[in-house]
Length: 146
Figure 1 (cartoon, rainbow, N blue to C red):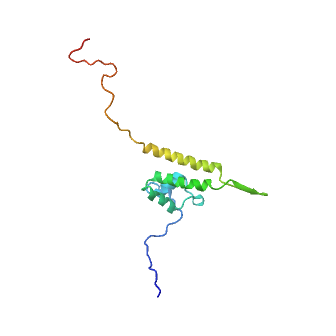
Figure 2 (cartoon, rainbow, N blue to C red):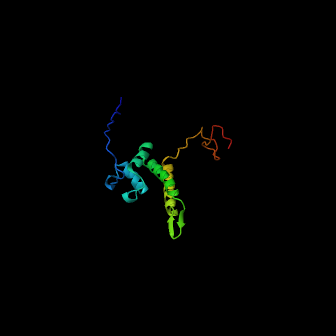
Figure 3 (spheres, one colour):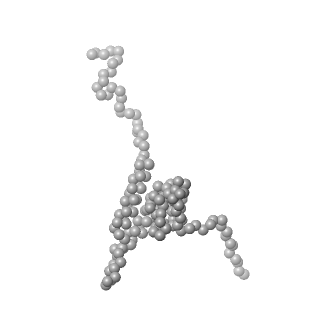
């Protein structure tokens, strides 16, 4: 007795690993993320479209938050390249300090931009301690000794 597994059909088309069209920057959030993090060349791309789309989905389609998520994800990749090694005349270098510094600075810049937009508004905790006349103005009531 053999059971055949059901065939699941999906209407989704396979997504490409990389896509970018500067003409669509105004309307395509995936391209906006690529633009903001400088991941616009296919030959040097750090992210696949599906990874950026995951960041967008996770952030509620917020481009800035997706950029922060992508840069946060790439830091371990860059940092874990090791120090490099040398065996005889052969030498292989690890990640450049400049590359790690670039991604770290970009992450800090994006977080600073986020804090500009999301700084909490301070509401008064109670009634104001300031009042009219507190700086030496006399209360000119009906009975003024001066």
